[in-house]
Image (cartoon, rainbow, N blue to C red; front, side, top):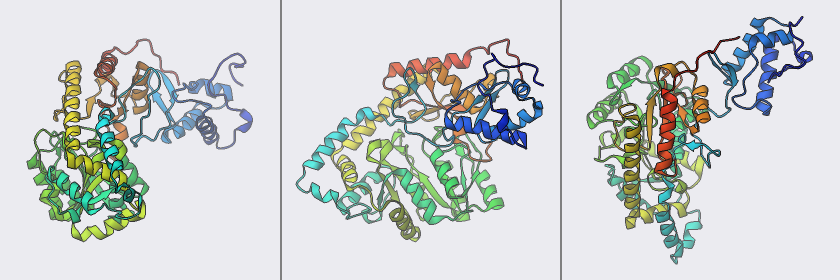
Length: 473
């Protein structure tokens, strides 16, 4: 019999005993999952201590423990030593989300917003494009990969980043994500293995999972992925491809020096890998470092996302591919996207032609450098970046917070007033966990708001852990 009658004892989770079935631990897990997914138990709700729930249901403690453990494995719960077990947020842990407006009272430093304050120049270009007497042609299905004039502007733009291709070889697609999708579905098959950094662009990780591709983490150092580690992986696992962000990698903000890029290119060439080079952030580099596509053009699918550098709403990316891979890649783009918006492409091309794009990336780089200086003023050497002006910073957690799960770290920051992303959102399956967070500097509205958010995080990370916790199962 239960020790308590629980008549006047509040419990966040009180399952109906009549709904229990054998095996009991699975029944508890099923009932708990139903309550969570229905919204009856909101994120971060504290669950009853396991001993109390066992007493309430008049079952063994170990049965409740097993039920909770099943839900933890599904990502429905997280535990905090000394505090209890809580309902986990139901966002997908490895997916970059669109922000919209943050909840009231919260400072948005989780998702990356590419400085929409500079979109006035984009609006000016859009008006000029629509005022042209030939604007009606932009609403037709013609030129799915970009018109000759648009591709000429794109080729000139890519030349600034060290990619020398004729306009005929440039492919214009609907954003970096579209380019990655096309490369994965057209050049790889389910079961293929791809190498990548242990922590990388989360949407790439999700796409690989959807397509049943196996991602293999390759360790790195302060200069990025280590060539000898990639070579060892190639000898032992024979991956077919590799995904890299050599300039200002998301989320770590590491940029590979030219020598490291050459060393990796040699390994990629030697083992015949297909490289997907995501060049979203090279526009922030103070000095041009040639992309890996310049060293191994015959092995590289190169993607330069205009959405980040110029305007997120345009959803445009520029791609190049070797002749041997071009036809299947174009087929993949056609089957997933049909065509890229001619209107959006023409707006981007107009900005590239009239100098507006250069003006925007200069303003973004200046604003980003300013915000990085503010970060350094608040955190000093902690979280010091190798790159001078990334849109985000990679911040190691203090030792006392290393044992906390990613849900709890994000929840503690959210309770303090700041939204951020834990390193686990970016971690490849099989990669070593890292106690760190990515802090987006570009998403806050003002530098004052940025400083407030950073000071909140600094105080949170430096605060002493409350004493007096007792761990009750």
